[in-house]
Length: 118
Ligand code: HEM
Image 1 (tube, helix red, strand yellow):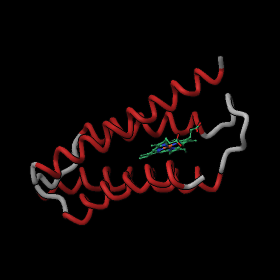
Image 2: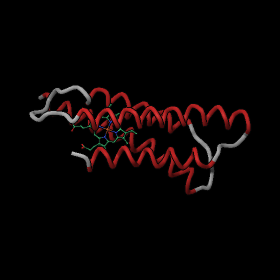
Image 3: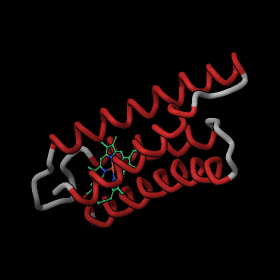
Image 4: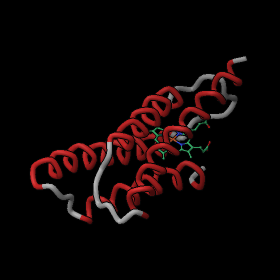
């Protein structure tokens, strides 16, 4: 029962990742160097679900807390870039490209850490 609930939370976590990364890809492909509200929404969904998954319930194995800690730091870095980026583009009308690319790279990095690091 608890296992099923955990899998549902993992699913929500993945939806958050899909919304964040999808929103970023849409802008990248359209050559619009900017952050959007949808990226914040995706990050919030992935973050809340991730924190719920960071507690050991509904599993038989031990969690890798080093890995989870690294993912949390990366998530906070993405959040900082989204926040500072939104303020910048509001004030100056544009976003430094390096900040835009970092958001996508760090998002992919967290997915790679989740899947590859055991
Ligand atoms: C942009 C941010 C994030 C992305 C893209 C992301 C991506 C993913 C992906 C693709 C998975 C599924 C792979 C698997 O099941 O092994 C996963 C699982 C997981 N994530 Fe994240 N994640 C993010 C943030 C976080 C944060 C902030 C935390 C915790 C503080 C977290 C905790 C976890 C945990 C504990 C699992 C494993 C679930 C389980 O096996 O029961 N994630 N994440």
